[in-house]
Image 1 (cartoon, rainbow, N blue to C red):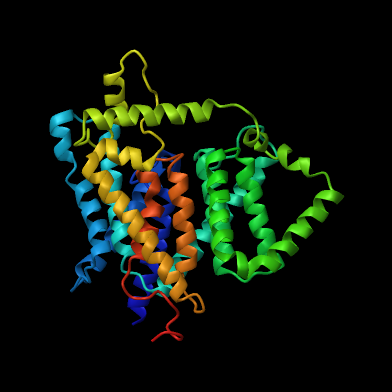
Image 2 (cartoon, rainbow, N blue to C red):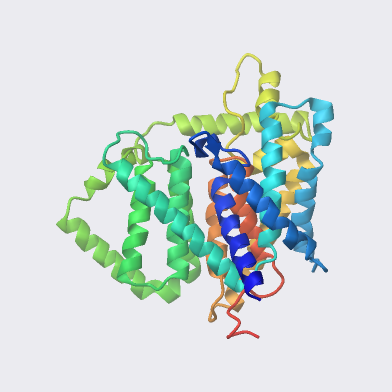
Length: 388
């Protein structure tokens, strides 16, 4: 029993580590000539296989069927390379998804309630570590806030993920309110609009669904915030990092995203079966060689999947997302008075979905896919002492 518990803890811990890294090989984790990402990836794969071979039965549901179909489509997607060619970026992207992300999804889809809680807490400690590094860097840098080689968008996204986890998993007290405030301020300091807009949209959905229950508390909070703003000069927030980018009228980022969307739609119309993993940039430049793109993906998960895996892949992904949101929402209502993770996971899905429309690639959406996989577990993810 002790050996099994140790193995389970190690597997969950390494799952958290690989969610954070997301790559089999990451040049940022090379220290003294040793690349620790390869070591950690191999260790995760070694821990994954005993779990895989221990599976005796698979509890199949229609919703999980869409998840498995999407993973299988990616697994066999190299067939498209036979028609459209392959790039070095495409091979790297495919290897990372198959070797790291598919095992992550399969491992997390076997979790119980206590496993999910442990996973969320380990990720939260990772967020605190990033926040510490970000706070140190904030004091001596004029650049947009980022740490460990990740971009400002990635940093801001992790800060907001941490604040959502604290809000739904921890007690509502002053200490946790201050932690949430700190994490959100750090995300603002990164100067990335996408994560902040995604957070605001998530807050709007939360208020829409809980308005009557939290009306009094909402009024108290607004009164306190209003009082604080009258006492202090709130403009100091814009002096934190590159927070001023959030309110500037520079439309460069917006125009670039619109350009990516238009080029993706053109690609989907020309190649409805998809151009293959990692070929978005190359085929966009082939269709319009007079206007070359430097980016390797469209910064939109849905359009990326439609363009690279075809209309079939895009439709399966859309159905999977809708199914997961529907399933999680109604379980959130059903277990609203019990210790469950469905409220946390519903709002995490909303945030990660909206954010995936502005930034990141398919591989960057690994936490979104893992949250979906956990949400679709047939057994209720509630405290064992409450629901037998």
